Image (cartoon, rainbow, N blue to C red; front, side, top):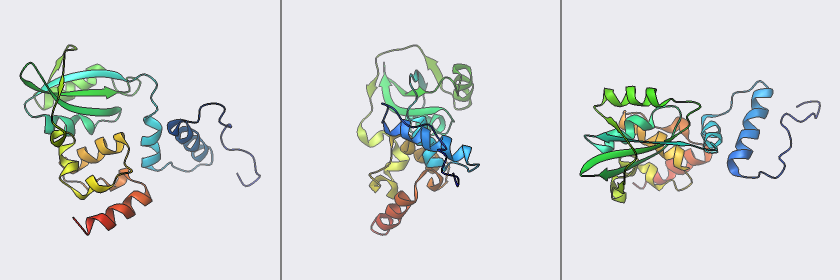
Length: 178
């Protein structure tokens, strides 16, 4: 702060990107400043033990987009299980309950499945909406940023609120060539 007191405790031993982001977010909060959305997402990627859920969907593209929009969903993966299109999720159970996930799934006709063998859908079907946009050329996006931007694009939104200033500059430069 302005008196040179530390705003966050010193990092000892845990130098992962997510741990650093958590420390930065705490410092901003202590200083009375809001952490940018991209820093919040980076912090969330360090969730220690994400929980897994699988949903049968009529279309995994819309399933990925629908579930990816939920706060607490960290990863979505389109796939197949026993002939059905499915979406596998990794989520933070401290922020999102299984019951809430099931309720949101029912809105799109998705049904929760017990853990089964899941075959990944082809790469072209993963994060479908992101891959059809100039965002696919922004290589510095984290997995969680991709999930959230994919969900935003599916809803007709830009996804820019999830990106850092540098990523937005990259998007502007690659968008002109798309």
